[in-house]
Image (cartoon, rainbow, N blue to C red; front, side, top):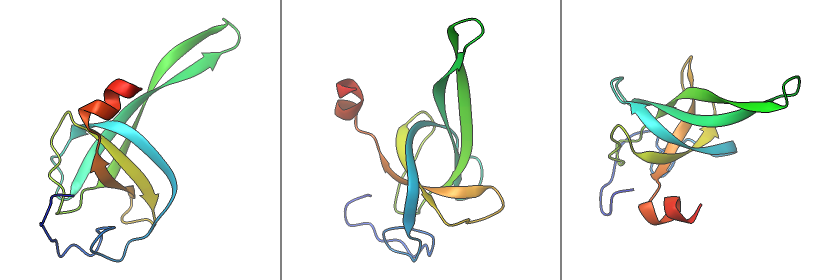
Length: 105
């Protein structure tokens, strides 16, 4: 959240009425072309037991961007599950991941 910046977004978990619950993920913002929405992607590993190997797979979801956050393409963000906000949006971006946090992992 930007210091001192207040938003009137009713879908903002900080200033609005949306409560957070369930799962939370860390991913990279791929697109912000939709109004109030960002596409977030992260890589996971899937085990293929037949070949005793693992493969990389991507998960892409749409998340709501509150007006009080300034999110750009390529940034690492943390998102959390909420009630359904639209047909495809069930997550809200909570915050950006700082560079120090990425280096610790």
